Image (cartoon, rainbow, N blue to C red; front, side, top):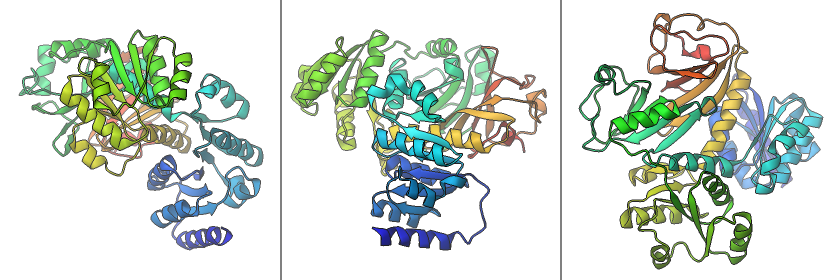
Length: 475
């Protein structure tokens, strides 16, 4: 074990004879899916990463792939953290499989160093205590990937025709992605004509995916059947627009969930609260009994959710929405394909691994939720904000269209080169839109005469990556 740790450290010290990067000094504890994703993203954005994990193979794999240090050991160990450089670290991110270990890692780090700390905490028993834990332990953020995935699935089920729904400005603005049917009224029209006809009032078309291309459209862009269109507006105006173009906006009244894990619990709790009937099929009898106590208003079925006959018996052909949440990606994908074959139900599929994302996209599964991706996005948004100037701060970050487009919400904290100047007079980078401005609780779809002011929140949609400050939009 010691020799492996020494080997990893020696290898990475040799690599670091290259010029020093200007990013943050970050320690990541845990080299699972989230840890690996964070390592990839944060090294790409120029940060100095040190990894800690008890598995030598995981450390070796990531240190071979990226310009990072690696230590084999327990992340909560004082001596391991000291060897990892906790005294000079800007941030520690604990994303092991153990909630308690993650919290302990951050607690030790806060006592030894002067860094910010982020912990992944998944247990529902802690879900009502997140604010308390964050305050008392002095954490910058507590991330719950199961809860985040459930909230994203619930947002989609509130508007089943949507492929994705992202929320900004505490829900005042929504970025919604839909796929245009062959006979849709938008097909053949350009964006400028939508404005003249009044169809696009109070909405802004942000990005369009067509075949393998993603476009930040201008006024002469013409829609085609099969386009995946992303637009931003308020919750109310989004539904008005969708009705105008002939797309359904009704919320799913009932949902069938296969798998009774943490995500299923969070999702069912959320859906029941907004009046959606919930049925959960779970194979483990003891877990069924737990769910019956925790979710008394849900119907809990003990059985194998991959059994086609059981699914038919429980009404898969008639249910309005279906969410496979087993712990096995392949099962979730097969359940989705089966549901699409036997019914017209809305399906939201949970996928944990990224390895075959290209193949998954070709299957046209519709709405896909990646819990590990949601977790990494929230952490990367925080890191960018911490690394940026004090002129603005990232509130929210979403990747769209396989990470080819970023939607970033900035809060404007002080005057800068982008404030007080009409948007038409700013020298903006290409492939970028100022998509929405929220001011004093009111959302504005900006025109060229609008300005960005101090205390506004601003949503930027762009094919560029790595923006950490609002001034990055300028040439």
